[in-house]
Image 1 (cartoon, one colour):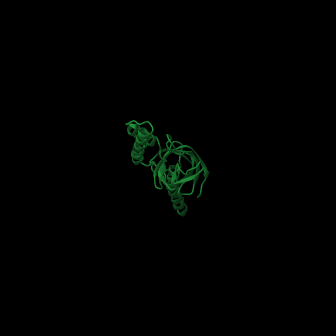
Image 2 (image 1 turned 90 degrees about the horizontal axis):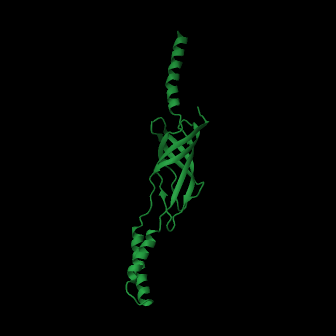
Image 3 (image 1 turned 135 degrees about the horizontal axis):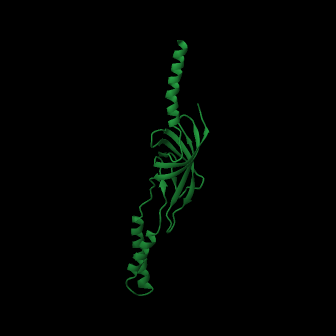
Length: 186
């Protein structure tokens, strides 16, 4: 009788553990989301810069509270006519249980911010107008240099692009392209 009760208790405990462990295993194609724990920007960012995402959870609820680690894989600094850009790839997923997976996770969504260029555009138009007016009157002795200068100043400022900033706490979505178990903690 004691053996039968022990066997029943063991079977019940195995049944309650097995579905949870199987459900928490990540798979290729799985969508994960979390918060960026390390801020990055295209002005100071560099290829290989480490990034970390916390509070990672899966859309289906099978993963919750994991951490992902990765790096910045591409950076484009903002310049005249060139917008700032960043690309990150996540390569390691650590579940709350301690199980670690090598992953190929590509960012499929996040909210990046850039500065508003309106003030710079208005300033460029005013500066261009003043310079154009001064050149038109003193060198060419014609009116209308201010209008041409204002248009040129505005277009020059309009083409000046801003860097991208991804702040700490920004929500990020990642899709796993591949998954491989590295270690399992028991």
